[in-house]
Amino acid sequence: MNHPKLAICNFEPSVDTLREMAFDNGFSGVDWTLKVQDLPENAFQEAALLKNISRLEPLEVRYHCAFEGIDLGAEDTSKAMAANDIFRKACRTVQRLGGRFMTIHMGLGRTSMDGLSWERTLRSLEILVNYGAGLGVRICLENLATGWSSRPELFEKLVRKSNAGVTLDLGHARVCSSVATRRFDIEDFVLPHSGRVHNAHVYHEERDDRHLPPSSLDDVSDRLGLLSCLACDWWVLELREEEPLLATLKVVREFLESSPRQLSLERFGIE
Image (cartoon, rainbow, N blue to C red; front, side, top):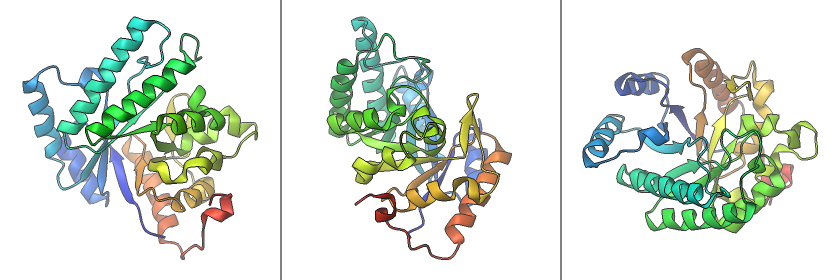
């Protein structure tokens, strides 16, 4: 089993402090979250953002677009067009920052998918994936705890029909109703497209909009075992406070440093 790159989130306001924390704890990269208000409005703001992020070198940086309430598939055409413009702008920003991977969501922040069109979502996602590819940016869809992307059978369609990459969120997968009710297993999120998983979000579970760390390796060993069978080499410890982050890091290191595991995708029914 090859050891993945472990990445830290940009939860620390000071880039210099974040860089120091990453190096002190053996992280290889930073998963940088961009919100809509973070997207530069002009060349001056873009240069300032680039200068800020460049201070993280030589750490690798990938990008996570948390655009709550911004939906490509909105039934309201004007909202869908505005969302398309925002995501395209994000693609251009990531490309200019030197990024190669950009994680997005469908229905982020929604309690239901009312007001969204499934067909428009599929079509618009495919167009965005192709747009990103033209810029050298791989668009990756994250599975959420609720909504269409929380259902493995619908997530598979979104990924396959759009040709998107995948960001596998282990905490969302654990608590989504499809898995909680045992209708599906967590591996069903990757079973049809194991080669498309480029990023993973690693923590125990999401409760009340908070990411919780594992209390022991037993909490996450099966999910890390699945992840270790994939080609995905980017594991983001998606905790935004130092104590739970380091607790998760300890558990992940315990997994990675344990005796070599004879794991294969066949164990999970993945060829």
